[in-house]
Length: 324
Image 1 (spheres, rainbow, N blue to C red):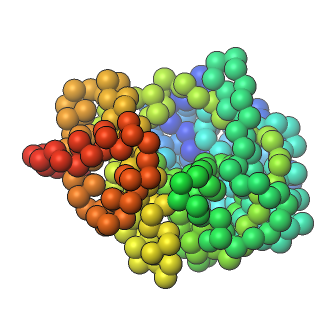
Image 2 (image 1 turned 90 degrees about the horizontal axis):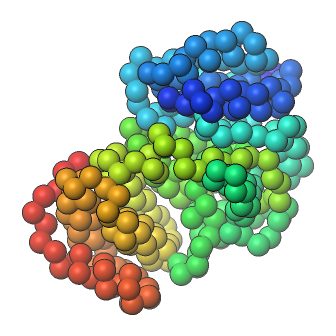
């Protein structure tokens, strides 16, 4: 019986993959498996993973014939996983030794559907602790109850899939798979669905995941058209939340978050290629017109002047180009 499956997508991370794999070795246990998903890498990553398949205890190597993106690679790993519990790691991040044993013990002790954890963000030599925006620790709660308030950061805004552990019953209920093909913001519809539909969760003060920021190949650093998938991701959040039994309460949070992300991208528009920047403005304007207008008005009225003014100007913009 496999106790824990760890799903690790890799794409063109030959510089960082050895550190990731060494940290997995320092977390190996006879009843753990590591699903190493090669998302059709074009550098030396496949050779590194082929060696790991032989040398890393519990390694299972899966290779995509075509690059599908992070969401699709995670889904491949989920489909191959056999564990009673599941978790994720990205192919350029790493772990503290023995972390997964502690993480597994925490969810077994609490007996809930999923557990969320803090993490360490690493930018160059700098290390910063990022905490789940939820004060209560080691207390099992209904995840629906912590989505709100709309005007503060909550657990649905801490969308990192690798910052936690999940019982297999969530996969059996269809709550762990990601929206196929999303190239960025794939965690957003995923975390919202998890909080709306799972029965129980808890947050624990356990540090052990080291998240590497500033990687040149990361989509967070690249201003190309793939970044615009955040619009498809948040459209899904709005659409699914609008069908929820508590839509009237939850939609203001979803709409306000969507607007904040649009404003963030507009505020950093110079990092996008010119054609992508034009598309960002046009697609964002169209997205605002699709939102429930009464909820949108309340969201804009609640935001600071600079962000609200930027978004109101965008909303008045005629939609001349809308592309997927």
